[in-house]
Image (cartoon, rainbow over the protein chains, first blue to last red):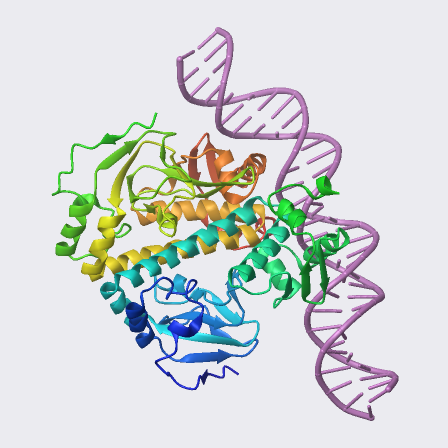
Length: 247
Length: 247
DNA sequence: CGAATACTTGAAGGATCTCAAGCCGAGTGG
DNA sequence: CCACTCGGCTTGAGATCCTTCAAGTATTCG
């Protein structure tokens, strides 16, 4: 296990500039000249197979990781339980929580085959002082991560189970759409149990609610193949309108 | 309302260097020369009275704010509900979530008289590129904020009510202790309702649990005067040991 | 002192969890 | 090709935790 395949090589030229992740990743909004400088420091590309760890809580922190393709989950363990903190996908940056004290404090696991760009933090760090546009983008990324987690806090603190699940589905769809992927029909990469661990619910509860959404005719779901039928009703539940109110 | 008292003036000399918040605030770990440069850009000091807003969700973002003294709460509204996301105190930085899109997305309200240092972000931003030690500290601060919220995510997603409250109390005590304040005996600044809104519980539930902790002889609490008697038992519950197991 | 607000406690109900059993689909070996 | 197995998924029934609603007490503030 823990195979570490470095991609065809660090073929400096066609990387960030051709990645297409632009607006999501660190490269977002950079003028070409700055983009070039970022490309120069990006380390090897790594391929992870389903189930492999990108890093584990406690590992020394040396690099940030950008997801180029594929799907992962991040987990936090404590007191015998485990909280899924996110399902990173294309263009998202992992490891931001490790900057503070030089150790990762969550696990990152591939849910599927992933291509990951490694960004050595010491190099990035030097570059930030030189490239204002990159520093801006880096700060926006950190700030956005804080926002994202505040939204999750709200979800776990205030929403009932059906609202949590609706928010999850609506959010997932939005993330696919924002990347220009087909978003009506989605292949879920995570198990019901992982969804539950993300939403603070049991697997059984997730199942029952999915069944409910299915019976209401809002989605179809066979195995992990999800199709959105009535996005409006789902969005209404996500906004807090009670299920019964929609018939 | 919204009185904005600028302190005696921006008496450049004795600010960050004499603040005592050093290790918590942005000034933490800076060599004296860099500290001086930070001091130069820190804007006025502002005094907030209990109930006043430092900023509200939707306000344009121009400055970060450092708490010099006093206690606040930060709130996030959505879908008719409200989630307390934190209770900032001395040395903590507010507004980090607003960097991404130039607007605050939570409210910050004083729970008590507060002294706040305003740090204009554009100035800070320029300084970061010049002062590596400051940039480091800034990134650590952002990263730590992410960590803090991940801990809250865990709490809301996995802990039972009694564990949540125990974690809250233990954490509060630790924050006082870390600042060298007396931590056995604490004057709470927040209502039971606010504690509930932070922990994802109702006020009634918080009351009942506090009564339980009191009856178990772990704390005393009259009004908002809290005293820790048996920190070990409380810590055990915070770690997930069930209440009954402790007698 | 009176009013308003914060807090406390009880009882009943509901949402979610736990435990348990059965189902389905994918992969395997005969 | 079929039977088998295994993990993931589904559904049911009962228990539990927490909420809701309600009443009452303490505290603060004018």
